[in-house]
Image (cartoon, rainbow, N blue to C red; front, side, top):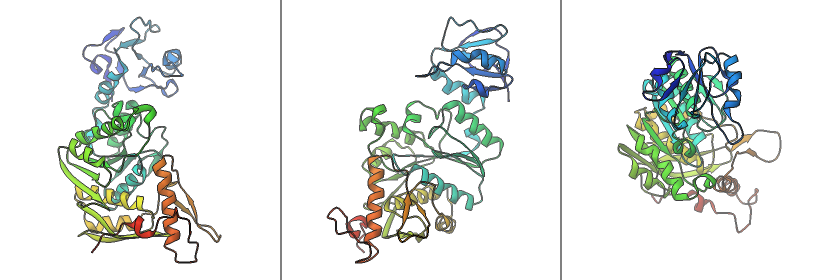
Length: 386
C-alpha cells in the first residue's frame, strides 16, 4: 500500500517533492523502513526532530512536522501540519480506513475491560469467527501475540495494527478503549459496531480533573456505536452512556431490573454459578461478583451480534481466566493463592470483598472471619427475591 505525500492531505504545506511515494508511517525512527514517512513527535521527554537523520538513514523519504521553518535533509520532503491532531485524519486515510472492513467491538470502563474483552473473544472464536484483540496485556491477530505499551495504542500504531488485521482476514476486532484514547481521538477512523460499558470509579483524575469530565469522555464511545450498546445499569454512570447512544440498547445488572439480570449468584473459590434471567444458567471457572458483571457484559455483546445461547454458554463455561485478573495459582499448600492486578481503589475493594466472600461461603469454622468488616454473603450476592 502506497500513497503520495500529496494524497495524504488536501491543503497542508509541502516542502520538496509532493509526489514521493509513502510506504508507511512511523513515529519511532528505529522502526523506519524504506519509503516511510517519519512523524516528528514532540513528547514531554523526547523530541522526534532529534532523530530525523536516523530516520533518513533507515529509509525515510519524508518527515511530518509542525515546525514551519524546518529545513529537511537534502532529497527529503517535509509535510507541514498545524497540529499533530491532523494525524487522526492522515493515518486512517493512508491505511484505507481498515476498520471499515471488520466489525469492531469497543469496551470501556474503569475496571473489567480486559477480562470482558477476552470473554467476548472466546465467544466469537467458539462461533467460528477469526478475531483480533487489542488491550492492556497484549494484541492478538488470530493466535499471534504482539506486545503493547498503552491500553489503546496511538493512532499510528492502532491504524497499522488494524490494517494488519484486515489483511489477515480478521472478522471481528475486540478492543479496550481507554478514556485517554477517547479524549485524544486515537480511535479516529473507526466505526464501532458495539460499545460496552463496565463501570466508572475514581481513576485518571490527574488527566481528567473531575469525575464528570471522566464520565463525559467515556460517553463519547457510545455516541459512536452504530448497532448496539451494552451497559451496566447498576453503575450510576450507565445512564449517561445510554443517553449518548443512538442505537439498540442492552442493559445488564445484578441489583436493578435490566435486560440481562444475574440471579442466585453463588461465589466459591473455584468458580461462580448463577442464572441469567429468562436465558440460561452458568457454572464458571472464574469467581467474584465483578466477574459476574464481566460475564453479563460479554453475554450482552453476544446478543447484540446474534450469537446463539448455546455457543455463549459453552464458551463462557470453558473460559478459565486472564493472567493477573483474580487468577488462582494452584499449589500444594493449605490455602488459596490469588494474583490480581488491581490498581484502582474500587479494584482493590473488589478483590478484598471477593476473598472475604469466598471465606464466608466455606462454612462455619473453616477460615471464616469474625471481623465486623467482613460483609455477609447475602449482602454481597444481592440475591433477587423469587
